[in-house]
Image (spheres, rainbow, N blue to C red):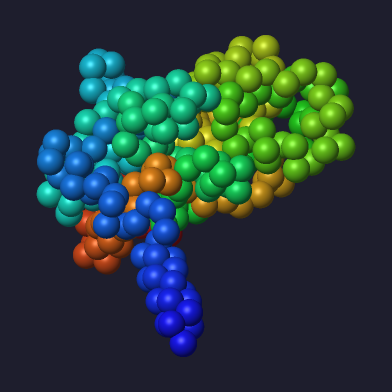
Length: 267
């Protein structure tokens, strides 16, 4: 009888232990508390990514759609935002090292990235498009075979291009740039034949330089933008998602969107 009681007590202990998380419990996570204590979160970004985040005319201030939206989310959390430009191909490492608290820069949610970081709820729809010069003879993705194509290093553009393996394997050259601005400069100068790019960025660039570029009618697939966060920052993520929802619901996000795009394009 005594043995049965001991066994039951043991099983009860194990059940309570497992229910409590048996490892890092949510109550052990101080991420939100730490953000509130310092009074800000550090936003990592590529500062050459208009209109999401980029240098203003005098290059001293970083502005953009994501910047304005981040400030509104920060207000809901009772903190402010500090900006920290980071090379895009190393931005996930910077997040996990603690150099930044979020990646907010038009980051595509992918299964590969989910292995290393967590994401907020999606806030924007996007597509990967192919841009060429206005006078280019290229009219289809198939015609990229044998051509020089550019894209941003570490971006989801490469994954999108690889989704067309017959084309990707038969390029003359694939050039990877630190940012999209450099890729588009080479396209304008005819050093490359096409650029694979986020539609939001590409369309913005076209609006700034009418008649210079055109977009192929065939895109390389839809995707969703999210904010990258550390997997360990459970309480911060929960509060962040709640604040992002509030910004969408109360019209603040719509106002930011209309400022930059003329309409509400939030997901």
